[in-house]
Image 1 (spheres, helix red, strand yellow):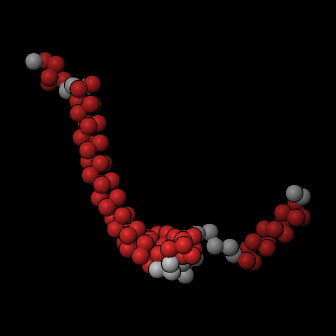
Image 2 (tube, helix red, strand yellow; image 1 turned 90 degrees about the horizontal axis):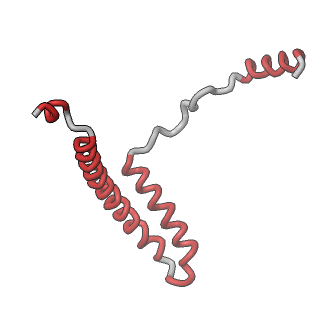
Image 3 (cartoon, helix red, strand yellow; image 1 turned 90 degrees about the vertical axis):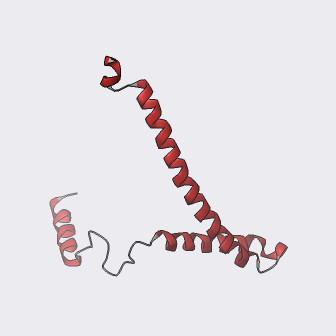
Length: 105
């Protein structure tokens, strides 16, 4: 890029003042409940589009609360599994590298 084109591009960028971050009118980050509800709605629409002809028009409406409850259960199980994995990892670390006080005994 020669200096004339670069200068023109620079001046154009200064005139337009592009936003470097998120615009102020942007939606704030959703909470976990809102994100779960939006995902359930999206899955419900997909299920409705795929299976409405075969199973009836209410298949999407019925799947939305089901998906929402499934996601809540999945999150609870994930928290429980995270605690279990933490305990197992701590036990393995304690056995692999015992504290110095145990070596002296």
